[in-house]
Length: 322
Image (tube, rainbow, N blue to C red; front, side, top):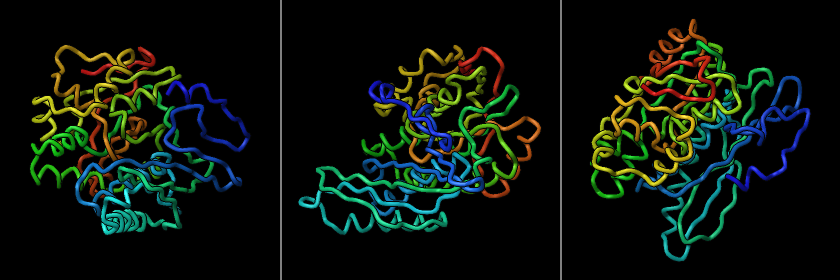
């Protein structure tokens, strides 16, 4: 991250979102009516089934476009594969899962690039579109906004338990279902409702991405830990200490911005920092619209969506977790 901070920032009158902030994707204005959204993401398998891995990776990459309020159009595969030690049939299944999820999103896979690598990795570079005036950035939250989270937390902890052989098929099925669900409907509903800010919750965990929404702002957040949706197994494995390595890094990196009340259980604090894969959207919506947006999400099948807190005027650039 330090190396990235030393890169020169490029300004351009048509660049709506670039490297200057921790946005989920870049946005470039082409015309008064059209801007393109670009993003890329890939990683190692987090589930054993190749087809499911492809679906999760695709949903994760597409999510960045949805977090900006956009609509994906095309995607290109990014593949690392150990061709000398792994059956090519596995890669075919991974790619099939990715293509199926991209098509479900109404987009198309138009190519990609592959290299030989000792460890399999897969993801996509995605291009989407949006009206320049309807881009949803992560830094527009205002005091009084309600915070809505659309998916439960705990995928990182449960994935760690799966690798250790401690989690059962039911837990795996639940997180795979969540990770393969597109954030497209949530993005559509937030655009129709009108919101102030949004990000998707991925590797930095809920609190890490919430901190990104506050960087450079004049507002803070109050989060009710008991209201945050979590997978039931996440508590069990967190209490057993089955925590992914990235969780501790997330907590350490954001320690200066997050105040966790004494009454918040340690396991729950862990879940709030748990790195997610293909997590939900974290949306800051005006209070008068929040109930309507949440009701519409529930009606459209986004059952886990919940109001988890609000944006406050002070303390600025800090998150209070109770």
